[in-house]
Image 1 (cartoon, rainbow over the protein chains, first blue to last red):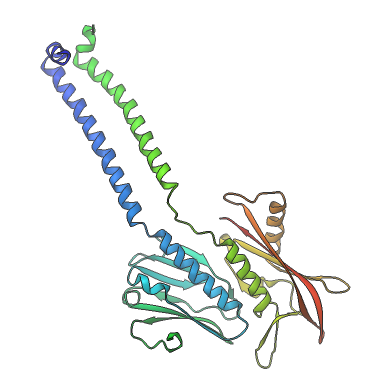
Image 2 (image 1 turned 60 degrees about the vertical axis):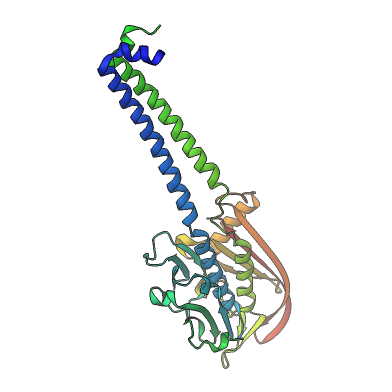
Length: 162
Length: 174
């Protein structure tokens, strides 16, 4: 009743204003819903915890291998669960893990490992096809220092075989 | 009873515009609150400071950074400190350099007549140790400290002597 009275009083031009205002309200609500849906999607697809976990795990393993007084070969199968999902870069006392296909600075997880200054770990980049077929990381320590090797599915990884 | 002025197009529009600014602010506040509350439940980070500290201790105890290394065979004698080595371990290994520094350590071997000290990032260790003693241990920038004592052999001028050693590692939450 009130509405009708108001419409009657405000006339044609006023009514169009009310419509615009209501449309703005609907648009605002739609915007909020879209933002919330996008936020939920971002959370659902967020892989930072996995990347962080892998970067820290690999870093700690390299540090442990470096701390080892004798020869050591350690096989890390953790990476095999994320075939083609992440790319890895190991260099300058840092392990960087990023979503596959992204450059190594964008949204990646970085962690540090202890590295000898006399014989540092050689640079290792695992991306593209290497990442898709990655089965195991081999961390080898001997008199020459620590080396990280990546083995593909089906590739000879003898020290890693049970 | 609504006034005449309010029923005019400009009046309604002005009133609604002000109301929508208020509504928008409330909606944005609710939206941010939802994001803030939900984000508190998501785990994105892992605290490995304790693991880092013990691993660095093992680096100092067992790797060739402090332990005696046979020059002929290259064999490392874990747990035997080489007293002839420099007290600065920064030249031996790196562990998060420059702006990425998050860890520092000190090893003290109780040798006679004076104890020998080995540092990995001496200045950083001393700075952070003061903060730790002052109680700055929680939150971002908080310092964590792990200490361990062991009786080790110290190789000094061709002689091996037993000595109490203390290892302290400080880490900063960055």
